Length: 442
Image (cartoon, rainbow, N blue to C red; front, side, top):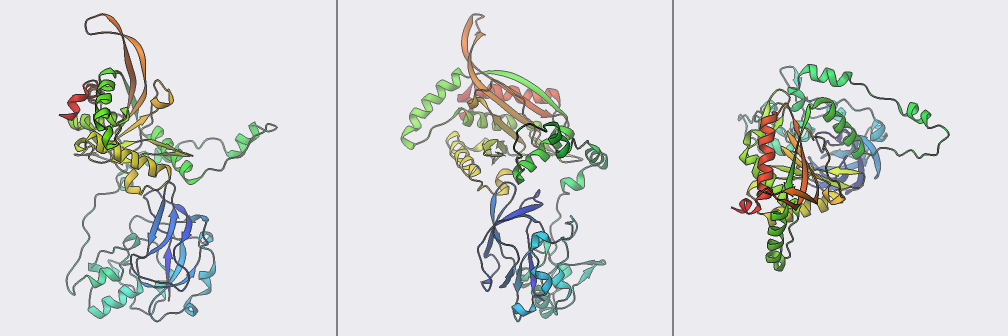
């Protein structure tokens, strides 16, 4: 029987997506690695590749279809010896109206077409089915390879043709042990508490409050739904506390002007935000115990400084991550940040570019905001909220009253990861780096 191509999970949080564009048509021959479609997740548009080779027998979902559930069929792939006549009538229903098997962490939802395939029966290991494409099972039978010994590289660990062809008969290819997922690590009481949290008034209840008033209903897109869910999770489950400092920027502004003059022939212009990124990255190295994330029943302490920076886009925001920021020059950080921000605004970032990191920066100073408290982006241990640089009267080192450019910052800290004294050390290191910017180049 033909094989169904399923809607992939292109990010850990993806539950449904929009099939933005087909890159193939019915009758096209495809090989493993060929591009099949462009799929919009809650935050990005990504390309989806074929896993097996064959002929596209039927496209089940039209371009532009929204709300297509992960693991629901979107197309039918014909393998060698199969034709369009082999496609059953049940494959004609639109995928987004189908009711897919619920995804599970331990094993993928079964492929209906494999149950009736003329290929060797689906093998089992310890009573559980091993998922492999019909072509992979046929090749394994011919080569005398035990599928239970292979690690699948297909969706949800499915064994595909390439896995079997690269294996040797009698040789086991076990998957590497993986760290437990956040979901597996999360303690049951925390999950129960989250489930018991009040959901708030319904849409109809709220709308009834404004009966007789003019208003427009604005449906939530995938990004806004994700932001709402994650921020609710953050405020309900993360014990935030806040540390505040004022930072004098005059030495940095003078140093920045000098550097920009020297870098002008290269077309490089450093922003204050570039210095803030570098200062935070170095501070995480100076206070390594604070360079950590919450992982359910343990902490993960990172070695590099992977710093996320909030980028506002229409309808939401991204937090692209600058990895190994502590070893990169200011000009390299500046160029990378500009590239990430531009691609964030066009929603062209891949998930690995906006996931991860241990620390984040949210800068609203350019909007004239003096100070604010940012919400931690889980599983990060902290986030720095940056306000505007404002000319203020200050008492100088000599005790005399003077005027300086002062920037107010607030460090939001996850108390499960970072205690008060440790958070104070981290913020002091950030302040010291920004007030002595030449040290950051040493």
